Length: 380
Image (cartoon, rainbow, N blue to C red; front, side, top):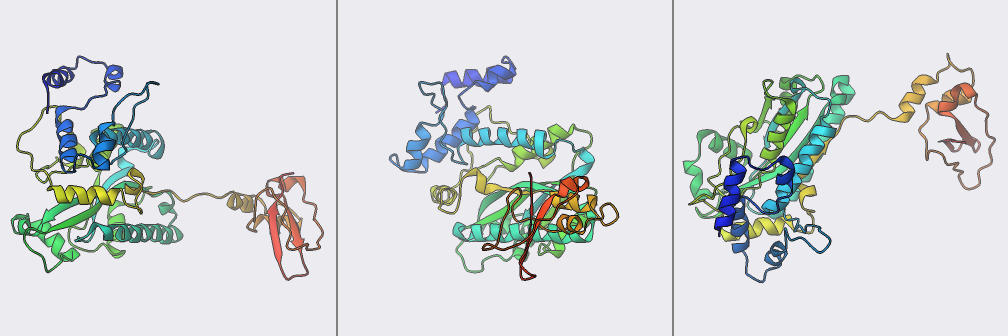
């Protein structure tokens, strides 16, 4: 229940009577978020481990440390995770990017009846995107700077509500492969992936065509939108991360367009269409399953192509720059273990001296009569 003190706090926050530093020290939730927390606890028995763990979430111990339950559906925990992910995206992942180089994509996945099948789908999609990036990078150097950061999200829907859904929703779900035999009150799950894309100079239309050619060719399955150039890039990233990590357990929650998404949970709302208890329990059980690890399992990241040290060495050392054949061979060989001399079962060999000019690629070559050669870095 929302008491009078919580209502006063919400009104003071709306009136901007607190500084940013003071807001960061608040340990309570807004009335709207408190409603979701209460609904989450009501879905379980009083003595259930989830309720017991959530009861201590937000408490401060004797050493002034705040306890967290770590459940992705807990408002206090996902707000904390959202803050950390926003900071990392702005300061690290996309720190030097402009709005023109970023885009937001939503990729729909096949609907499922059982959440236990979702982990296999997620792993399959990850392999698809990794293989796609590797294949494109071999064909075009522009894809070397392409990267993706996103989160998996799951919505629920009943079969009886499908006939009242929008036209695009029905077309997309039918093309993705809806289960055929089910009652109207049966629940099916709609997984999808939200990602922020750094294009690296690749046109958005080319990225969309690449996704479609890689097994995402259904109608309305892939939606890619550029960032709003009229808004600061940090603000765009902040709103999109907030959109990706909303963790709602209600059917009638309809956010605005991703670029304009801004939650308003300061006031408690009446008649919120919460998920049924059985679906909340099923979703929590899946998030806490053996093959899941909380927020980490819901995060998806595909980084840029890494430049290896050996590639740099091979470019610096060539027959034209160094007359020593061993230097050239060592520079183009793949090291076994940097800084460690490795022998193969007491192989007899002679170490070759390498000129100071090629110190960056200094290596020793062990030769056992042509049967096996191993080249390693020597940091001495």
